[in-house]
Length: 161
Ligand SMILES: [Zn+2]
Image 1 (tube, rainbow, N blue to C red):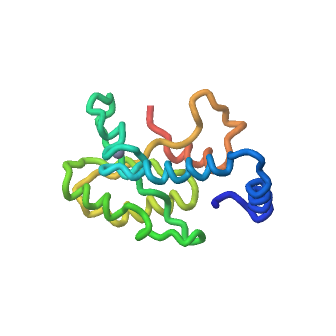
Image 2 (image 1 turned 45 degrees about the vertical axis):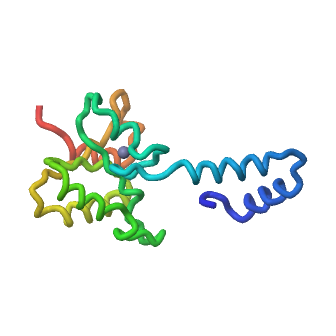
Image 3 (image 1 turned 90 degrees about the horizontal axis):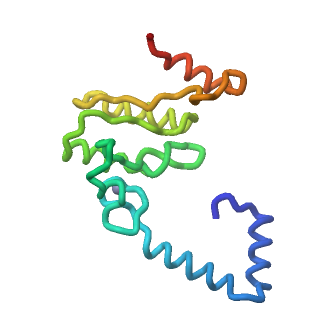
C-alpha cells in the first residue's frame, strides 16, 4: 500500500493476525464496499458514488467553469507517463464541448510543471486560451516565511498596478 513501508506492513500484518476483535474484517468490508461504490465521474473523472459528481451536477455554482481531473501528474521516477493520465479524455472534451479557456491548477512541483508544460505543448495550436492559477505568497503571509520557489513564483507572476 502507498506510504506503508516494510516495518509498518509487518506491524499491520501482526495486528491483523493477533486482533481480538473483528476490526480486520470490518476494515476488509469497508475497503471492498468503497471499491464497489466509488468510481470516476463520467464528466470530470474525479471520485464519485454517482454517475456524475456533485460539482459537475450542480448547475447553480457561482463559478461556471467545469473541472477535469487528470488523475495524477507526469512522473518518470514513479513510472507515470502522459498515457497514464486522463489527457485523451481532456482532448475529447475539447472536441466535444465549447471550451474557451483551460485553467491549469497543478501542484507547483517538478512533476506539476512537467505535466503543465506537456499539456501546453500538446494544446498550443488549439483555439483555447491556456492559463494557470496564480502562485506565490498567500494573503496574510510574510516574505520571511516563503521558500525560494514560492518567492520566485510570486515575483515572476507580479501584476502591474
Ligand atoms: Zn465530475
